[in-house]
Amino acid sequence: SQDEGHIKMNFAFTSGGNDSWALIQWMIENGHSGIAVYNDTGWAAPWWPERIEKLKDYCIASNMFEFKETQSMGLVELAKQKMAFPRQGMQFCTEHLKRLPSLELMNELDPDCEGTVFVGVRREESEGRKQWPEHLIESEAHGGRDVWSPLVRHDEAARNELLARAGIEPLPHRSQECYPCVNANRADLRKLDPNRIDAIEIIEKDMGIGKRSGKPKTFFRPKSKGGAIGIVEVMKWANDGKYIPGQEDMFGSGCDSGFCGD
Image (cartoon, rainbow, N blue to C red; front, side, top):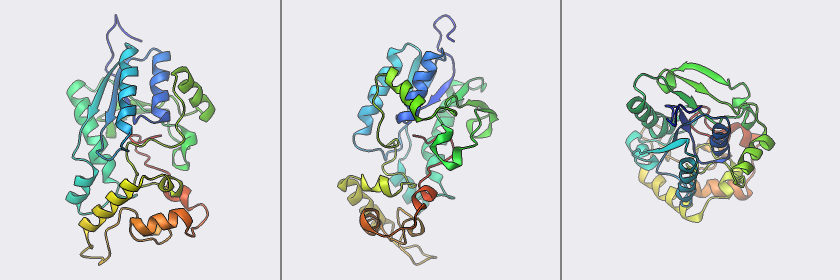
């Protein structure tokens, strides 16, 4: 709860998606004030910043939250520096675009690591999160701060009830803070804007050929997209190509760092 109107040094990480907006609502209803943190990855959908502005206004209007936004070099510049696209097993995007900027902000505002980090992870989200703990004590990834995931047992219906009380309609897709995420599945790809497809094609051409592999550097691993090489072929696969049943679940489960979410 709040102490004489003082906002506690708790950090609520929000991507602006369904789960993280529900997290904000849960915290408001249960008297947990704090600082809502959004990570600008430089790769959000064109309309996503407008949603984040609404979330910011909602947080501030509650009188229980401050709102902070971290900045980074952005996904495209990061890929060029690394000379590779991030992928499962090598997901440096989360590290450099979200975790490290978040840690810098938290260390600045909470140097004694007394705050608690709140995240909107739900066990129902994916196979990888079925065992997600509600409490993590002194999480190394969060600078030694405790992490609380109060929505772990919420199913979609319970999550949507929180959104309804916030006056928010559930989105029919995951957060679009990264559009697309490197873990995007076939259904995600079908919703891609043609302009973003064109942008990815240009980036892939700029990245060129791998010196060791002799193969094109592609945004998506061919192995996870039916063997399709490059965004043009990936989109053909997404729309009408053959694929292995269950492949979307295997390669589209998202990141389990706790920094990325629905």
